[in-house]
Length: 540
Image 1 (tube, rainbow, N blue to C red):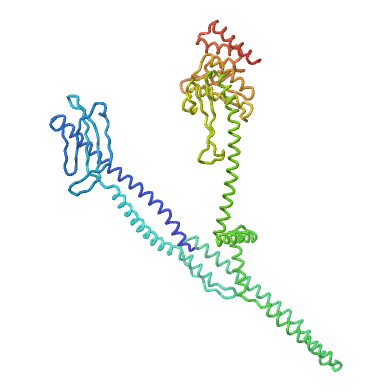
Image 2 (cartoon, rainbow, N blue to C red; image 1 turned 90 degrees about the horizontal axis):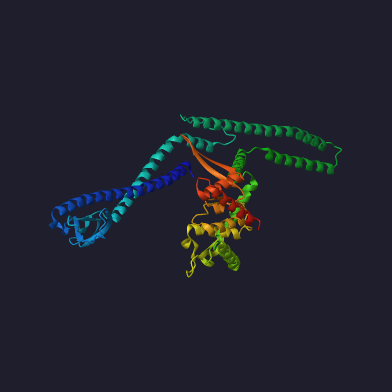
């Protein structure tokens, strides 16, 4: 792909996205402005009609003209919404044109001095939005095509002018041949980058020519050096052939040697001759290999691996139906394995749902849900996820005679807190969570239920670290360690502190939860009694 075509393509895509976004925004803004203007006109007309009707009750009748209609009807007080205006689009039948036309409608209500309520409906003609949308669409298409053509034409002219030095340089490189004197590079330009490129290319070509001449001179020198010893050998053989003592057999052998020398010398000289076109072909081949290595992995092995991969892909495309059939078979096999795994997982869930249900019922009863009904419904859903195809739902009924319903629909805030605590109690030794934080778990509970919750928190604390934020003394009394959170303010800042409490300080805070800010002996005695009761539970 040429540089200019590549640039045009990259220009066209952003332009298409920008103009499309602009067209959408333009359409919605225009339609919004039209509706706003129409609504303002309807509101003004409404004010005029209501003022006229309030001044003259004989005007309490419908009115129809060419552009605007309004209808007035008496309504009960329950239907009248005096401070509300409703705007919407509708259609009305135009008898002159014998067709339905779009209208903008305002519906409002007003009250007369005799405390009667009326509904006022005003209709006014408006634009056909579908026709307007179509007109805007085709206008944008024409604008886009025109703008794109103008941009491409201008860009083509600018690129052709700006990159003329580059194309001149490329043409000069194509005409260059090793061993031949290249034409002078005439490539005047004011662009600094092109000047640097011209200098670099000329330097590289001069080095290439010098290397070519050096290799050619080496070949010529080697040829000259070999010719002298070979000529001496041939002269000696000729002298031997002139010796009168040589037999006919020896002369024949000398003649064969001379013929072999001449033949081998001619072949060697042909091989030693330097061919500029072969050199250029080899150099072009090496450049191609280097470009392939840069593009496909940095080594010839990587290039060959990429070629083999593309060849395999081409084989798939050449036999596409068989390839798709193979993929479909693999997909069906995978679906079968997935269905089998989901069925196995569903069986495990259904098998253990009853066990978990009984454990949760016992935990909920301990948390003062005395008449609780709890079920775990495992139903098959339409979709398969990483967790299988089951849809698991907790159903609960906290009142006698009620059918179990989904947990989120029937449980209050306090009940949800206790149900969550029951789940954590059952799973206390089976999950991998080190620390559990209960914030305001005492919401909506008190009395005996609160003490049951504190006992369950102590059970969970056997397997986890439990942090509990509470305002109930029953829950606070069960803690192994107490912390108090205090907030203090100065002129320009607020500071929150947390500090650990000793046993006596903890009793004091527990007494405050029981009896208020004033510490009385009765409150302290009650706090000690609650702590002793908590210690007694922990020893069980």
